Each structure stands twice: as C-alpha cells, then as structure tokens.
Image 1 (spheres, rainbow over the protein chains, first blue to last red):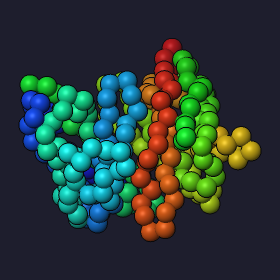
Image 2 (cartoon, one colour):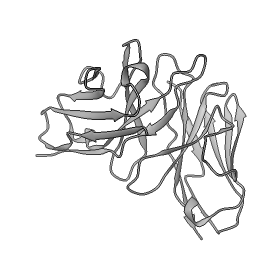
Image 3 (cartoon, rainbow over the protein chains, first blue to last red):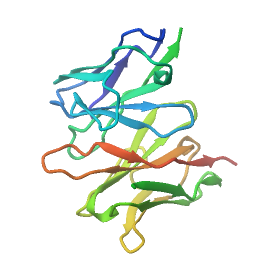
Length: 109
Length: 121
C-alpha cells in the first residue's frame, strides 16, 4: 500500500507567517493528492485537490504544489483561524486504500 | 444544501456489533462514492471503506472481514455494519462523499460531523 509521510509533525508559527507543510508518497501518485484542514472536535475540510486546485470557498492564501512523490501545502500569511491540523490523502491507488498522511499540527507561537 | 448526519455510535463490548448510519440530504447517495473514515482519540485519520456508485466495495485491511459497507437507496442512507469489534476500533467514525467526475480522483468534498464508537468492557 502507498504510504504518505508528512513533515513536520508539528509546527509553531505566528500570525502573518508563511508556512509550508510537506507530504511525501512512498511511490509515485501523479497529482492524485488532497489536503484537508481539521479543527478540534470538527470534521476535516477539503482545501486542495489534484495537488494544486483550490476547493471552492477556500481562501487564496492556501496553495498546493507537487506531483509524483513530493507535495507541499503553503499558507502564505497565517491567520488566527488557520491554526489546526492538516492532512494529505492520496487517491492514486486502485483499488483503495485511500491513505492519509499522519497529520501536521499547526500551533500558535 | 448537502448534509451528512451520522448516528448509531455508542459503547459496545469487545466482540460485539454495531451499525452506523449516515443519512444524506441534498444529493443522491447512489450516484456518488461514499466512504467511512475513522479517527481514534488523539490520533490521525484512517480510511475505512468505500462503496462506489456501481456498488463495488473496498475495505482497509484492519477491518476486512469484520465490517460491511452498504446503502439503502430508498432512504438515501449509507451504513457501516461493524462486527467482532475490538478495543482498537474505538474512534470517531465519519462518513464522507466523493463526487464522481470522469477521470477525476474521488476526493472527499463533504463530511458528516462524526459518531463516536467506544469498544470497552
């Protein structure tokens, strides 16, 4: 099964900072990758799909890039509401599983 | 408006069974891919199962042979039958929708609020 490894596992940053989270796949997955944001006690929310396409309604400060095995999620200028845990998920496997990364917790410095 | 509402969680003893439901509104369950994802307390997300619009089903190795995903088209509801439950199945269970678009991976665009399953004696 395809494994996804996110780095870092946790990150402290300040409002206004530019932040980058990395997701590495154990084998090539083309661009079949999504990024989700999850706040405590809430369901995940889709931010990015196809590695770099912004989901409708998601602020433009979020962006994604990459293909193959290496992917990044960038938040250009952190806002207070962005402090959350972020997950990548791959959809290249057929049949599934649709594996998630282990998550990156973004905390206020 | 798309909505997913899970129910059926609770406390169950090891070896027991539970059936989760996910009632959908604003779209047709049978026309989309529907998945279950779980999250153990304080842990990350784990994909559990999917049912495709054509009816094919797939499972994570950790639940294969014990869990069954299904849907009732007349009720527009997704189910997860969980048998032979173990302590490690304790988690919040989310249902999630994937819009079916030709040649596009089935990203999870809508999620329910989750239902907690606790397996303990």
